[in-house]
Image (cartoon, rainbow over all chains, first blue to last red):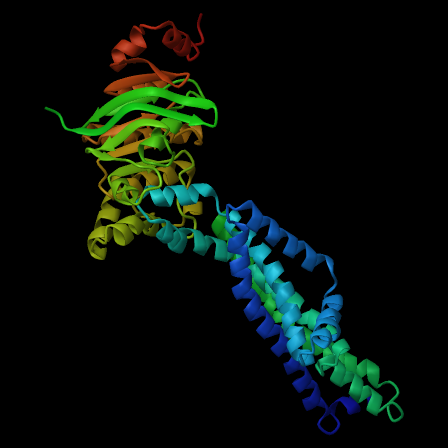
Length: 226
Length: 247
């Protein structure tokens, strides 16, 4: 049981919590940027110009094909060092997660708008609504309802994937855990189980409510669109 | 002299090289009910869509009270407040209650008084037999009820003409009647309408004038009695024959 003791020894638990905060901070900032840029990308993907659509498509595919870890290494070790710009690991992480999040978010948003039938637009403009009014009162509200569960799911995926940033030296929750385990290697050889177990519970505590929320919205959604 | 609501002159419409409507001229007088019939794909629905600018036209003109209906132009928003349209698939907005669906255009487009709109909404819902459904969502209603609500949604803007595009085609047979009764009632009260339908008995009962379209052109035009009892053209005779099962 000395493993469990280690978790709460000194300020260890507080350190884990502050590591968790780093995780959440990176995720939240990236999700925020991804929402804004993703909306723009989503709008661009619906444009009539074939060239614009092709560029968006290429961006989406390139970002999706490469593992996020490779992106992290490219930005943190590659670009930053080559160009001589000194970016912290956390900033690099936010850049990478925003690049990835924008691609995924953009595709979600495009799909959300495409799933609103064209008839909805026609019948609103037939009532004399302007294009802008049709979007505000009819198209957006329906697209958003479809989008919210998907956006929440993507957000939980992004939170979980931030675990990778410990590999570019960011002291997030996983890294703190490893430090605690290393420091107590001899006193508590089984600390790994307890420390990582605690981190598991922490991730769960953050992601589970989100996942519940998304399920609840989806259920309500189904009721309305039947 | 009757007042002309819509005037169509030499309308020509094509999708790519495919000619859909050629040289169509029709004028609709106030209070008139015109029924467009014809085989599937003859361009009836496309014609209705051209009348309120949902489709661009390649030749001729459509005017409402002398104002040109121009596809994609800003003036269209104003003109559409005088043209009601009801579609086959009702197209109520699923995220709004029936009352909200109906009140959207009067409140946001016509900027009318909220209380007055509410009162009229309830009055019209009552008229079409939907009293008590104001706060329901579209998915809680049957197809026939949805279509009646959609009719109310177009009535409340007080249009000069209502275009009905195969409004019973997606309904179960037992619901067709309740919707058509509403339309008959509107016709009796002097509402100007242009109706595309496949319900021949209804067409006969409601129409002042029947226009038979085939292959993108007007083949025959006349009163319902003339058209249904003594069609002049061979194509109309052939078409009407497909609705009878005795030889």
